[in-house]
Image (tube, rainbow, N blue to C red; front, top):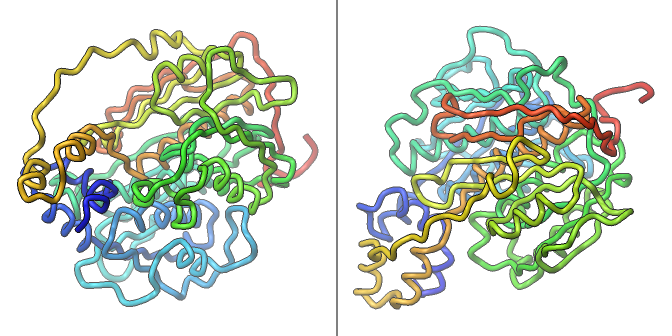
Length: 444
């Protein structure tokens, strides 16, 4: 194993950050053996169910290296997302799933609230705007979901499965969990969608947001303008973390590759290949809604104060214990950018974790490389996809209600029941640009 292999292996780094009793090869072996068996019945015909399965495929094929297995009999037409006509099974296989007999050790994840023949270890479903995961099928018939609650329940399910299979978390897959994206929604359908968005940062979260946008029921994506901003180049370390990155992205600007992905789905794109700076902001013809996926505090403060009509900024946990944590801030809100992101205290230098010290002692990694890895943020695709669903829900809420949304959401996918949520209502009721959703017929 080369030094580059070790430094690029973000998945194993996550396992080591979560369980520091492991050595590198032990952590990697857990990932290589982890597999998932994805099943569905009636949910395969629903928009939310297909969104959930596509979200699961996008995350789990990066997190379960032993394979994600699906039933090739899922031959219903793909009804969700902006793609050429295909079947659900073909879309899942294109995403990296395998249409073959799963190993006996694969965790069986069922998309749908209906009980199935043979015991599933985990169920997930959407109940209106609420995403649910549970070790048991539902005893009541849930309401129809939508693409956002479907994507969230898929992300939550992958998190539960990963915590059980790879991290040996004793609470995972043992209790039901749920999260309401829009608790007081009057209807489940996604009524209005944004007509223009500025995506700042196209790493783990930014790609998850773009992926989730591709699941939404736009009536005509050619009328939707996306400004994609990122100054980074894709590397091999992004492959197990970022849901759109493929081998042919490596060495290329993320903004250009992301634009090609979006344009293949009909979106209109503009690129900005530098960082957002103080004094930047939307011009007359540029999107006035910003979705932020960067981890630089100064840059986030600049964006929140840049004159956008609406900003949804999501932060993801950076360490092993925080890997499934999300904190969303929306602006305008009850907090100023400085209050939302105060300067953190200076961290004292720590000792090199035992797993990385062992690699140095074995000559497989030098001291500089070990310190670099130990200081890197962990990245979890499922956490990013869940955060993307939260971001886009607040945009849809703002547009549909004329100014009501959550300006703070603090939640851990380990225990969604302890989430902290603060709702906000704008006094100015700015009407943001929108497109009618394809789910809703009739004049605007």
